[in-house]
Structures are given as C-alpha cells and as structure tokens.
Amino acid sequence: MTNVVDVRISTLTGQEVLVNARLTADAVLLPLHGTPRGTYVVRAATSTGKIYTVLLQKN
Image (cartoon, rainbow, N blue to C red; front, side):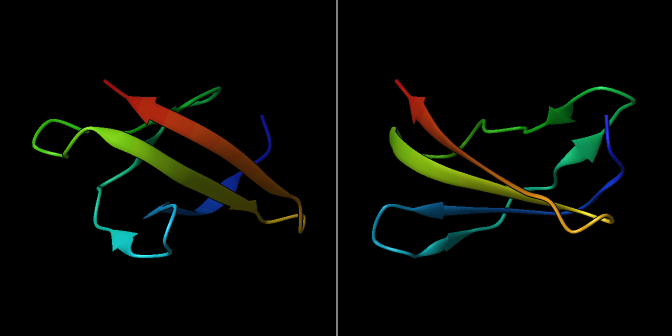
C-alpha cells in the first residue's frame, strides 16, 4: 500500500468527524465506536498525490 499521510472522515453534509485513524502496512483502521449510525465519506491522501474516497455505512 502507498504511504497514507492524511485520512479524513465527514458526513454526507460535509461535517468533519474526528477519528484517530491508525495505519498499518496494508490498511487504515478506523475506530468508530461512539460514532452515530449513518453514511460517512472517508478520504485518504497519499504522499504520492493519490486520493482515495470511500463511502462507509455504519449500521
């Protein structure tokens, strides 16, 4: 996996959610306990300039 340097999570309305993302060699770990149910946008930017965007549904 590319070196991820920035991970941000927001609601669909754009409100940022504070989560301490942890990085491993091949994954981004998002501790979401205490975060309300809903759909979130997760964006990860890498040191090479790539940006990954994922929709996350928490039930």
